[in-house]
Image (cartoon, rainbow, N blue to C red; front, side):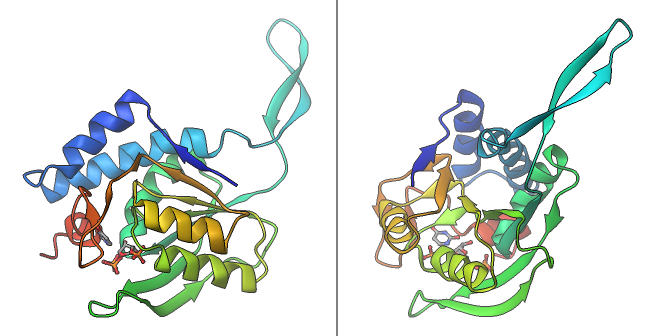
Length: 207
Ligand code: PRP
Ligand code: URA
């Protein structure tokens, strides 16, 4: 499928403030919520519509409403949690699943610790994590969702590295990726450059 880079000026402006190392935890969290809401607008762009008769104060009309698949928002813990509130404001009826993964400091491979999803596997999944670096965490999460029976999955991140995008596209060609930026690359510790640092630490103030 495809990589969608959301280059809207508001998203780009807010992301630049988030990247700045002087930005506080409080501001970082607030901006992540705002960007998630703006990105959510694009991530849901192809949601199917159906038409239902309603009556305005003046006449009857066939009015468009969201049809079909219900949505489940699935943050990859911890950092993906920062993107949930913004999306929930757009899609208040969405369910929320959780996948717990952290990247081992030495191997940079994902370590799995938690999985909880709603029962209805027909729901469309929006998987969230601000950082797509090597792609290990996203691929592991997507594989677990597919093994559990979920078929309609899209991945929403803030900053993506080319390596991670390639890996997800190779392993899960059916999954669309939405990002606010395609960055330059990875450093020797597999941190994204220029990136924004450790997203979990910046959201939760753990450094
Ligand atoms: C970060 C980030 C992603 C992962 C990306 O999580 O939030 O989940 O690393 O790296 P990858 O593409 O190379 O797998 P981290 O391991 O720091 O866990 P945390 O969110 O609990 O802090
Ligand atoms: N995880 C992060 O939080 N930041 C990176 O740059 C890479 C992985």
